[in-house]
Image (cartoon, rainbow, N blue to C red):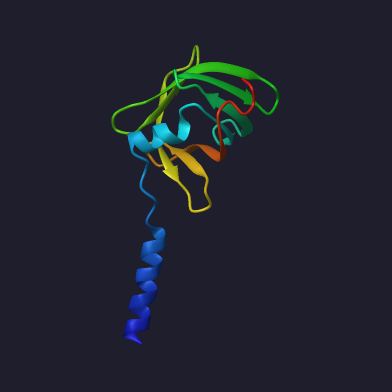
Length: 125
């Protein structure tokens, strides 16, 4: 009985451990020159985006609003975006078990969920 309880506790503990954030190289390989479809948790809106290899970002929200900005990945692996008249926002990129990726602030708040990545400029931005 003690073994069963211990096994259950270990299984629960293992599932509670979050995935490790991507390294700078892993994040760059995922994002640079690719397109994403996602959900901006902070805005409550779906969007699509293209992240050019040169660091330019084009994002189109579900209401058709187009936003131009910049993106970069810093040495610690954080992914940073900046849109005009907004402060730079940096987050960790954390993979989910279901193949999605989340942008997570240092306090654990999820700001965006990337549901799908596509190679290249899939939306012709």
